[in-house]
Length: 161
Image (cartoon, rainbow, N blue to C red; front, side):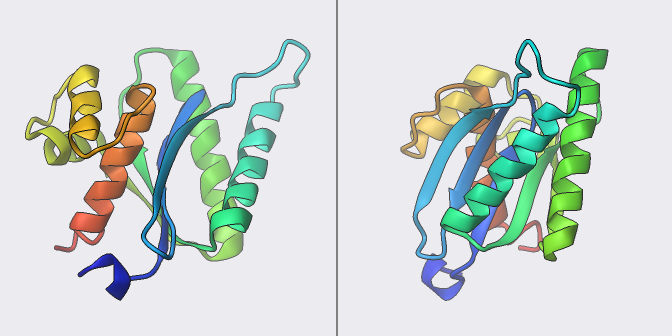
């Protein structure tokens, strides 16, 4: 299916303190970047998640409405703090999407890496190189992962092709 046959806004996310994102708008334009949700010195514990949901709302308002959201589904984290942040971001994302009736789905890390590089355990630099080979210039591996998720969703129709 070509993009003109499927004019839907799709959002892909690599969730974390630095969240990578890739967005295909209804006209087929792909925009990518990163957003930082690092808490400030005087922030309460929930401010990171409030800023994240406000960011989603603004992204949806300016570029959407989003028809679907895909995110990297991480099953193993290097540390406890990273796991807690990821869990909070997933809770915020899924409740935000539920309130708006937007379908969402996680994509296993190995699936994303295999689709982008041919190896399910590809290192971060290989993901950056794969994004560059597609004509993107990611600032880091978070943005590269989001680009890979978006292309996986488009090219496999969300795993159904």
